[in-house]
Length: 235
Ligand SMILES: Nc1ncnc2c1ncn2[C@@H]1O[C@H](COP(=O)(O)OP(=O)(O)OP(=O)(O)O)[C@@H](O)[C@H]1O
Image (cartoon, rainbow, N blue to C red):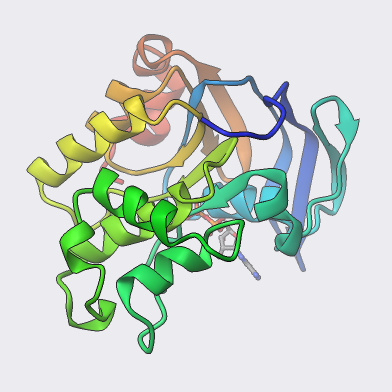
């Protein structure tokens, strides 16, 4: 879907992140191949958001390295858009003083992106709100606008941070269809297991910052270690 050179691989190599005495990620490695939908799951505090923050350059690893398309890579937040990496936020941090359309245009890569922004809003089923201000809109609508803001850049890698949070089952079903149809590489942090299991090609399971499993949804759901630490217990 992107006009960028296609992604070859995003890889994390033995990433450790320490915040003082707390190890948020402990020697975690992950390879993300083009077109794959990769889920990252685990209990609260397992390190999922920290892993996203490392890929976005918000957090520098204490040790370990990243490569993008086989080249050593030090992520910087202000380079992500140019590299074709877009991320949605757990909340819906939209600018209250701007219209929905203007908010989506913020995510675009060229200045005159009104047409692209409208297309992204249409794709997310919320084009009719283009002229509204996001603060006045229901949460589920603002989540869709947040998705449109990420999609407008036609990212090579779409990073979704708990996109199902606060949505009802119909909205989550819509979201699952969109994720599968979006046609780009997706990284998905999510607690909603039905969504993760139905859309992901592979899943990384974190527990106390450690990678305890990596596999297909079928492999993950049958992994006793995962069941014990996460799937068997309430999230
Ligand atoms: N900037 C920070 N400074 C100190 N500790 C942090 C920081 N960011 C995260 N942590 C800690 O690192 C650990 C991992 O947090 P993280 O937010 O990555 O977990 P998570 O799996 O995303 O959790 P949740 O499912 O609740 O969002 C937690 O113990 C958290 O309190």
